[in-house]
Length: 225
Image (cartoon, rainbow, N blue to C red; front, top):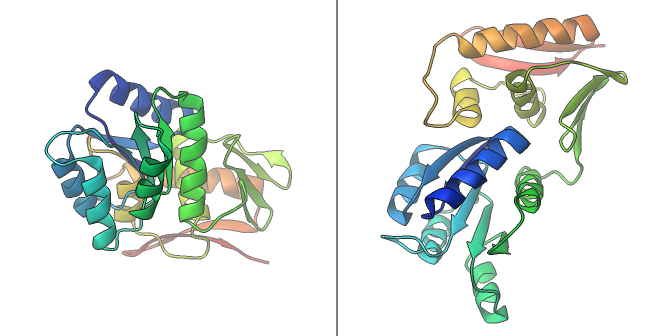
């Protein structure tokens, strides 16, 4: 999953990004102002936006309003120093999905972020299942017929994204956009290498769940009887 953090306090922004990368395994982009945030959102299909209200160039409320006007439905978690009921109602009315009042606990931030991403993808449960394969979004564990499948962090992230879209063809570009942030140095074969390792581990665990490579199109996670 890929998250945009819009926060002009550098230390807080770095703390949020580190917590999301290390605690949730998300790819995280950072920006300090509202204008750049809108440019980022035009370029990248984010799974979540964490948006501070008091940011330079364009305030958070206006960023949120413009996102919704152009029908960008990406979940938005607002960070605010104001906890008044009127302000909260206004935020929700212009399109915020959730809010947190500063100061806040980073563990709670991650929990809310996960919930918003699940909701944005139409999921209520904390586990994804495909045949005998189960992925626990909270524990970040993968089991095949009850047996744990040991995956690297990147293999887990690829599998999680594919399990959000079972049976669908997902292009390499789409995977790159959702798994890596702007700080990552692109290497053309990195996805192929991780997919190859993931496919091998799934094949060893079961012959029913298959990770296919469709030449020139991308990848598909499917089950076979």
